[in-house]
Length: 257
Image (cartoon, rainbow, N blue to C red):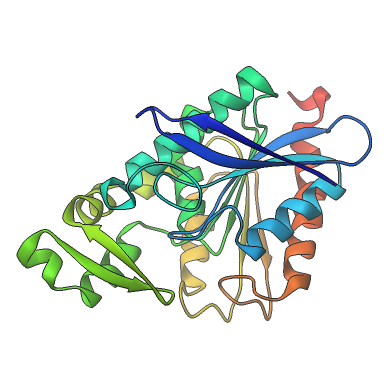
């Protein structure tokens, strides 16, 4: 596998840092765009393992840091769920200009919700993959509100997420609660693959069941038995990458375009 460090500009003019994982030999059979989980980054081990496993199967993957996270420019406190979706669209446009338009969209946790929402604005995508994704944005909003009552009183607060402190503003919560995911899933009109662990305590598996039930065919479900929400076991990333590559070939081959 070869990895290239690149960057692109989002709709607000910020430079977003990205990594492009490429197959070692030959041209990629397709390009994928990967959205990391809330407050994570492109360098998170679970993301990197899935991406590298896909590259080993011939699929090039662009993974990037959302605005204000990792090595990307911008203030995280000023971002919303809608701005994350806009970042995904900006990434897809960059890929179309400079590389090849993405045929596969992959999202982990809230990143999975983001790719479901962004798919309608990325016409090149033939297949969408969610990993441990909640079925609604209200799930995260409820978790944040319960840990920071000060947001209601002052409009913003420092919230601890996965052991790190982030400044969260009311605009993010309001945007999360105003986003309708049922319509986005029901109108997806793309092949969908849902991954989820029955043991996930952060996002219970009922969320995956709700996504799967709301989606139209073609759709597939894979249980990640024994996996954690953050894919901490190295074997899970390799398994996921190989499964996505095998499944997606049915939808990205030229004869099916």
